Length: 306
Image 1: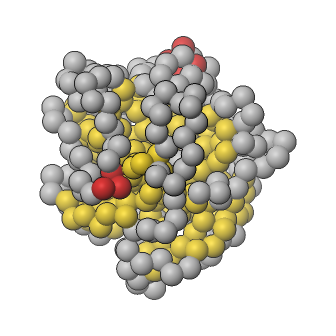
Image 2 (image 1 turned 60 degrees about the vertical axis):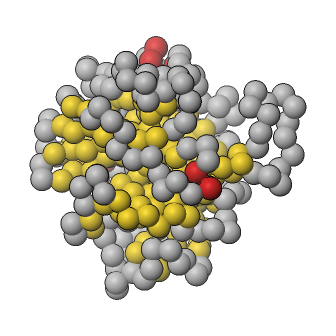
């Protein structure tokens, strides 16, 4: 089984002394534009502990310069009362499409008295677009009736339709297609957890789909009964992504280092972004929900899996 290789520079981003990101930086989206890699990462500060997105830019994919102010706070609607999480970014033509998780209070849920926050939360899928990571067009919640997260658009349109992957409230990753970004009339179940495997407890997409000659490549995450997060590989059919062509029998990456095994949430490697560079895939991931790491793998190794 192929394995990812950690960058010797890891972790490549850690919390800074800026008040909005001095607690956690993790789970970055990644996209290439004009030979630069943009990371839009999730950040929390100790004062309010509300999740927002920072922006870091690199030419080599390893050393990043980050902005001093948050790049995106969300659209400010009621569904984001507890912040925005886990962005995925794709570029279609000259526009960046940012799909993320909006968090608000679930007023219908029963609150567990053992919970620290004494409140129930509900995730929903939101979308914004930008051409410069400065000015945004807000679409707010794009699937209003379904709790969900782990969502991304595909990086191209087919027959003038957008394609979308997301995980619903039952833990099933679904596919949807539509000519409009805020209208998804029908969704199709695609994959879920597998009993007896490394992804037996919970599963979701990681980075947005990457187009290859073998199919749509997904670096995805899975969780087992010990609540350990690992990464795997999946290929979907190019013309009909509802067809799974390959799925990792074993994980390709798992927590091993101290910064992955110990942190805000231990034993977590979680990706929201991967890019192709120098005949390799660069996979950016959150480690223990506290810092950001980089892992790589040769493109030919991935495409020779099946």
